[in-house]
Image 1: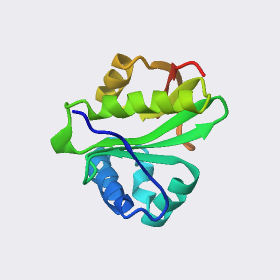
Image 2: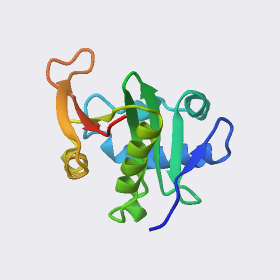
Image 3: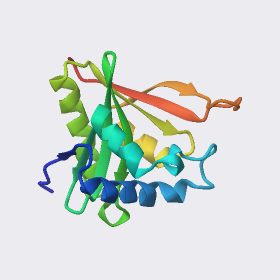
Amino acid sequence: MGLTPQRHGPDDPALAAILDLIRNCFAPMEGRIDPPSSMLRMTLAGLNDDAATSEIWSLGTPPLACVILTPRPQLLYLGKLAVHPDARRQGYARRLLDHAEHRARDLGLGAVELQSRVELVENHALFAAAGYAEIARTAHPGYTRPTSITFRKSVGG
């Protein structure tokens, strides 16, 4: 594949394409996951804010895959991993997972953590294959059943 991850700061023109990519990739989850994805509340202004406080990375021009990495105490949180439908099964998600692990080590953090909705079993298989272990199941406010699974991978810090 050979694509180098590109970091996007606030007001980067590529953020609009990244927002479109996230919306395109997360849209099929509507009606499949409950509660609905937070993607429905994402805006370009919000993504610009995220670029100031987190790290937004993409592969390809225009972006074929993206991820938002947010440093937290002792770990790097990986969110909004998205790969364009035409680019799936080509290693883009794995490339960004590997990049997140490198960034965590660079930042002196010992783990990468992410959450996935319980319904998205195909994503769980990807995370398990990449060495992530399930560490918790949580419920969104107002739900009595688990709605999300937390995965974590230790990377040394």
